Length: 329
Image (tube, rainbow, N blue to C red):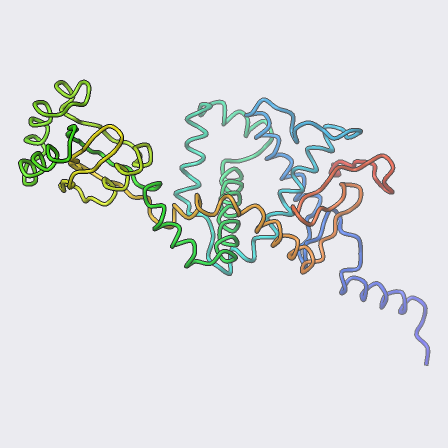
């Protein structure tokens, strides 16, 4: 028994559709397509950012690339990168907090002015909600980048580094009395070990050899502990507010320190600083694996897909079908 020709054509078309064998309109990441409409919207948001920065959309075009094609390419790269991380972010509950996104947009608005932002959005038919979604994506991608690095390095190792480098994440408000000898410092310590901050400052005005101590009373103010000499930084970081240190020796002499206040950056915030130096390399390797898993396709009219950055490189005049297309009107 043979099928009529029209039936065979229909079966082939259905099979191709089911397998996703057709060329994507713009791009395909796994089973998710970037449509022409998606790209037009992404380009509009990119143009808003370019207007606010007073820069060309997409930055400086590559050799032989039009400004429109560069803008399309940058916008499409952003869409692809988001699709690379979106499922992972959802699975690991890494969505950016609304308060963080709101703070970022409010900061931008305060910097450039509310009216400037409103006009830029209106000029490209983009809403504040669109800008919020872009901010959410950017912060979520950053969170995924750090999470990937933390997984590769190991939580235990990162926490160990956090503890070893505690001084880097500590801000202190301290007062001190500086004297020449250890014996003098021990005498000072005995006199102030139960003193109030006012009593400590009063004695610093009388005894401290620090230049200007008669006026300052040894008050150092608030500063990162890491800005002090290592011996001083280690000692002041080990104190709790209201505590007074045993004599501490530095190249300037002997110090007795009164800790007024202390702030320590929490691990969840500090790990970004700890992991940032290795995060790019780890994230790049992860993106390359994701590119293989998701079988990414980009319509050649828009450029070439680069697996290690999950982005699109410029179309060249020698590329087949490489006419640097714009989204359809």
